[in-house]
Length: 322
Image 1 (spheres, rainbow, N blue to C red):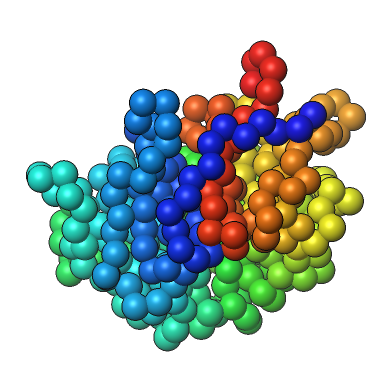
Image 2: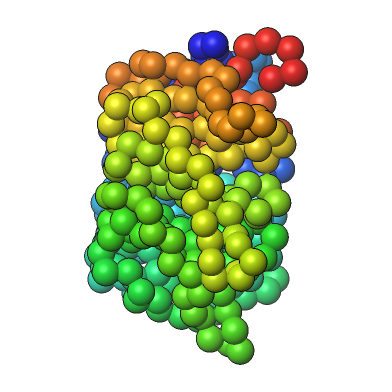
């Protein structure tokens, strides 16, 4: 079954790196090499860009992430900074401060479900965990809770567990690390090995009982914890569906379906059955160039993708019940 194109969103001038749905409103945030963040929403049946945030980053913006309550947006940039944006009383978004510490490019940012922590990672092989002040405090009140140096290469992404303050990170060193806080000290309690090349993307399922990863090795892996919290096992490897690197994965919060996108310009959606994972929909040339990110909407009805072609596209699985 072929994915159905719902909308094509144009406005970025260069590569679009990341798309992030607002947790409670039908708003999509995007960022790109043009150093801007754009907000998109439906107006009169059409998707339009209604706000552009610019002038606050000196280089490519690689990642955007909403706080769990949707009041704050973090933007991570190759300029080494992570900016925190807040919607003011006049409806405009303003930077309330910047988090600095990485030696060079920041590759990703992510808020914990508790809202108490913000994680960033970068080319300097580190993961930083920032303690977020209560009551929307100023960025000056953000404190570095930990600098984690367990990866030996560029850290590509970070992803929080959906119900606990457990952080997963993925790297150019082909591994996935899991971190938690024990007696005020953040520690790596598990390292997941199995991919044969760079791990690009991570996503937990809604229950946090499975972690999905994608890699330069053209595979998607599904991991489950064993009897011991420190032993996660690869329970499925999805291969043969992408002809180049799988750059992004996401798990539908309602159905548990896995969506993947890659450097082959393709999007694939899988569901789990008694026989294993099967493809329920795909689109071979979803974009004209590499697809850098993919994200299910909170309601699980729409998939957003973005790519090197400077375009964002929205997709749905045709048919009833999708």
